[in-house]
Image 1 (cartoon, rainbow, N blue to C red):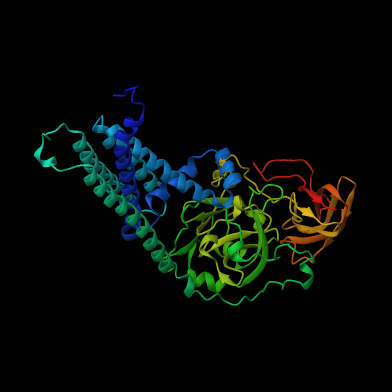
Image 2 (cartoon, one colour):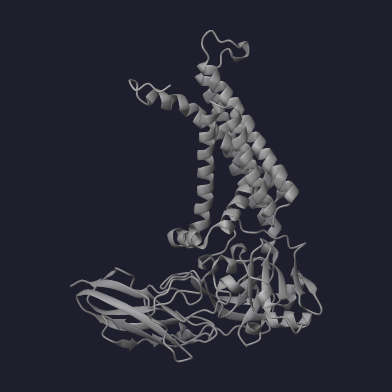
Length: 524
């Protein structure tokens, strides 16, 4: 009972041990899910499955907030949050268990049910293994907490101790046992993660893949594609720097010995391709710039790469489209789906099932063994990674993953431009300075970029030579910088002759608009 004369100190000290017991018990449960995934299921752990469920059920504004705050670290932030919240709830359950013996059982049972439901819904997990994993993790947590609370209760019994079996149990016994379970929790979690990553590396067999030589090679990058401006990025983005936005908390791992790409739906001749068969067909190489619909004006969720693959039209023609076919849906091994009109594939744009990226097999995080690349469409409607099937259906009968979550069903990329040099709020020296960046309008191409300094009128920038209409173009404007603060804006024009709009719009539901604008200071 709380004694106001003594303050909160004794209460907090009394509840610290059961709270620690609950936290450690939750940690043991988490550790068991990791080691079970590594040694038994071979798929993502139940923690990953719960995280995937959170992503699927989160409202659009929550996803937008996560990307805006954490950027490409949004998934890591979610996983850390799940673990921290789980450990915190474990501490609460531990304290409550000192008063009501059934509360820990109920708390861990709820944990088990949530984990089991998430595991069953995870496409990469067997439902039976998900249930077994949830049961083991729950049982381990319950047993750990029951034992630790028993030690705590032994310390609070009046002397002489009534139960001879509890003789000699004191604070040191509790701390030794708690420490042992803490080591178990950390060891199983870390060991499971290491084993899982090693198993995934072996299963992927990516290092053994030898890409075929393209019959239709990409145009070499022109010498004039790069502008002369210190600080501007490369015209072709290295694989390790290419942006990644998707719904996968754990990168799907695919066993090439069993993987096939299925082409089915409203086709006359459905068929499957093994990875080797797909490789043999993948002889077309193209540079294509990809862009995420979540990219804000001036954002960096856009990059350019050289892709090797087979044209979608070739795969679809082999299957034979039925007259009512109007939508192509890419289905991922992790359950993600994205759909786009059949007409976009046959209008002359670049649309590939890609197996290579910048002269390497697709990196795991970018879709190994195969993904879809369609020039001029945002990734949320086209860029299915870890491809499992291409399903042809009617436009009105199926919506991809993001459509019920508030995004437009069609996602053509909008003309955009970005200032990379100088940076916003940068202080510059007096005199000649480059203003430079990139502009993109995939499947149309950029014909002009203009810069406006302090609202004094638009000045045409120098364009780097285009690789193709499907890639971004670099641009630069030499500027005689004068002392003071300056506002710089940029706009691009595509082959339609229409400059990009100045109307400011958020990224949802179909892509952000507006002119990228920065402020710089010139000293002197």
